[in-house]
Structures are given as C-alpha cells and as structure tokens.
Length: 246
Ligand code: CAA
Image (cartoon, rainbow, N blue to C red; front, side, top):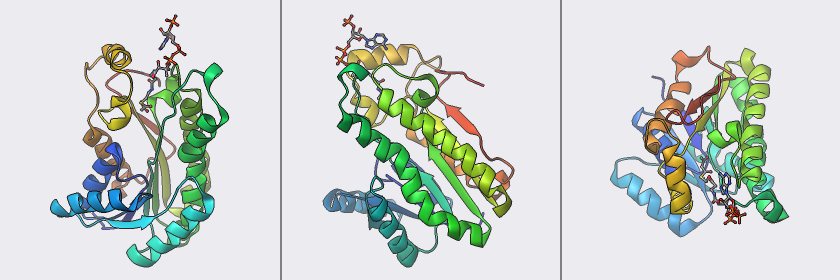
C-alpha cells in the first residue's frame, strides 16, 4: 500500500470518524475540516489517544471560498490531496409541504454543492499528478427516496450524477470516482430519527440491524487502493439488504 494524503470531509462525524480511523490505520496521512474549534480539538485528542494524528483545518464545505481556503491550507500543512472522501452531510427532515427554503438550501449546499466546493480545488492537482481517488458518501435514500427527505434525497441522488460525470472526465488521468451509498447506520444522525419511526425502518432491513460505521469505512478504503484502479463510476450500496437496486 502506498501511503497517501487523504481528506475526509466531515471527518469528526459518525461515519467520518470510522473512515478517518480506517484510512489512518492503513498508513495514510488523514486530514479533515472542522467548524467548531473546541469540539474539533476534543475529537482530535480522542484520535491522538488511539495513536492517530489527524491534520485538521477549519473550513465550511458549504461555502465555496471557505472550502478553497481550507484545501490550500491543507496542501500546505499536510501535502497535496490524493484521496478525497466527500462525506460531510446533514439532514433537515420535513415533509415537503412543510419544508422551508432554508431546510432545502442547507441540505443541498452541505451535501451536494460541497462536492463542487471541495473537489474543484483538488482536481487539477490530481490530474497533474496522474493519480487520484474520489469517493462520494451518498445514501440509500438517494436511491429509493424517503418520506420526509425530498431535500436530502435530491442532494444524495445528485452526488452520484456528479460521480459518473467526473469518472468519465478523469479516467485517463489515473483518477477513479465512485459512490458509496450507506443505508441506516448507527450514528447520531440516524439516532435523531424518532424512535418509533426508526423501529419501523429497522424492521424493513433484511439483515435485521442498523449498519456499523466501520462497515462503510471498509468499502471506502477498498475504493482508494491501487488495486481498485479499474473500478470507476460505480455506486456501492451497503444497507443490510434494505434496498436492492441493480
Ligand atoms: N410512509 C408513509 N407515511 C408516513 C411515513 C412513511 N414512511 N412516515 C410518516 N408517515 C405519515 C405518518 O404516519 C403520519 O400520518 P397521519 O397524519 O395519517 O397520522 C404523517 O406521515 C405525519 O406527517 P407529518 O408531516 O405530520 O409528520 P411529522 O412532521 O411529524 O414528521 C418526518 C415527518 C419528519 C418525515 C418524520 O416522520 C421523520 O423523521 N421520518 C424519518 C425520516 C428519515 O428516515 N430520515 C432519515 C434520517 S438518517 C439519514 O438520512 C441517513 C441516511 O442516509 C440513511
């Protein structure tokens, strides 16, 4: 395995932390962004206690200027980004007839527009160096839709449209671009769903349980290997059998 610099956006979150941990244990230098200094430092200390030194740079992926400044600082402090995992994401669940523009735009900006904001400043370097791995963390709900998530499902489906276009444009440059679509994973985001609603959702999962963040991280790490160089433009569903598209 060749050690690389990997940027995992939203690395301090549930799935993000597992991806950071997994890539770091494979020997990569791992970086993430943060918005809240105190929370970020507490998280960084927890990772350091596990022996993982994470390069942390302030930046809001939903804001193009902030994201570009973050990438430039990261390149300076941690080296050029070879592996990018567009993982940062939020929910603002509401049935559409009650949804306001803020709930719509916050989700689209953080989950989808961030793919532009963060990938645009790294893509030219990857093309020049003729190697790159980009992974979008989408969602089962971008594939099947979800009651109460018109904003989130639209953004998550859009992420895979981004993947398959970028995959075509950059294939000749040694860059692969793929999507991982997690189902319901035991993170704070999913635990925020009202319990009675969540129980009904879990009952629909053939494997009969929520996913574990490490199960998503394992798949992300697979896409970032040298050996996965012929896999591009794919969407890997990891959802306990909850949605079996093909
Ligand atoms: N299918 C059909 N009807 C449904 C439904 C469903 N899946 N979910 C709710 N309803 C119905 C209820 O039964 C209720 O019907 P009645 O009015 O006839 O009793 C009605 O919808 C309630 O509608 P309201 O608009 O009044 O609902 P609300 O404002 O109380 O909350 C909600 C609606 C916010 C969508 C809430 O149901 C909810 O949080 N649902 C979970 C959404 C979800 O799965 N989010 C995933 C978050 S995790 C994540 O996003 C990670 C990932 O990638 C998987």
